[in-house]
Image (cartoon, rainbow, N blue to C red):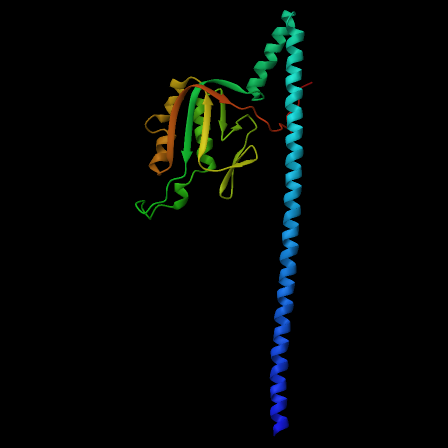
Length: 239
């Protein structure tokens, strides 16, 4: 009888010991996985930082080269009316392409997601309280129709090849992710741009959906140049 009791006690102790070993091994494996994941994440962060540093350095070199080129062109064209006219043509087309920083009178528009508060009718779809890519596209198109000569959204210059798309909870402009609040700068005759505030206009419709908007005229606005790469896949120069 005593041996039977001892066997039971020994069996229970072995069972508890086995469970303890299993738990310890699982903990070690989980810690190893966490360390491995953290190491991979740190390596990816280092790669991203190195790529960004490389991009920033290359961009600085490009900016320097462009300034030197502009200085050289100005020096060459100073005493040649024909070359000076050609230089003016280059500057004009650079402005049209968005390849140069510009300034002039215009307006600034801000558009922000609505504050989701209890006073808002609960029957309203919450997605209607957010600014979407189609909203920015509509405002940009209205600005163009009002004669805007240059437009940017959160520092991203709008050019002919610019894409405004939705990517999850954020909006992408020129491949760069931006989020609310959206600041749209436009250069053009401010009295014409002000038609965006007309009754029934798109800004008013946004406000009816609790989207917050502001419109401010300005005597001088500076809009940055387009810094992306323009590629033509299908259009080619006609021979």
